[in-house]
Length: 315
Image (tube, rainbow, N blue to C red):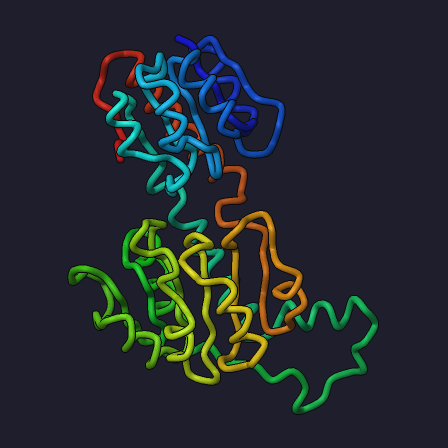
């Protein structure tokens, strides 16, 4: 069975894949383009793609009867794959839920604390030699303990963030979801407008879908209170980045902590210039044991397909 891995995964995963399959691994550490995706659909039995690989409807249109029968996505987000087009072509799609939950929630907490306490700004101050010593009113930020946190999207990751905020920092929790959730702590389900208006800290944890694109637009940003901070660990296009930059420039709310960007890896110069934005390079799952677990989960779906077993993680 021919397997393509679109970008090199941790060594233990690559070795396991090579021991089971006729493995091809791309050398490039950038997303697959349209031509590469077309070739993969025509020539491979399965592909382990990841963020940005262009398995769009256009690729399936070129190969309406692909040899490839499985896209075992490395990652929980799969908005780079047109799932409907894949299914119409007889190609199953899987992802890696669960493996990414705690690591992504940890990065959300990192961004909350860094943004609230102006840690990135302070680190730059020290590195550039601009720090003149401690002062009682220097770099005052937002005290996180006891604040109201609004979680926009209450799936696995959203719930993990809520637990950390409530049990670790005594925060009150609001959440936006399509249904009530059974949680081990108090929380109140509200609509998006209420969540943004009442939050001291708002965290975006929704999947990337056509419905969530630009969910946070200029009108939504205007609902944030002047001291509030906004954190995005979902996908970049959940926020209208142009509107975000304008609101941050105007200092209409406290600040933003971002691990994802609308046109990733492009980060606009105007955003990079802002001292009220904490910017990370998509570190959500960047820990070896987490990436190994993701790789093993993706590979388990390929093995299941090879053995004619039900797929563990279909989307």
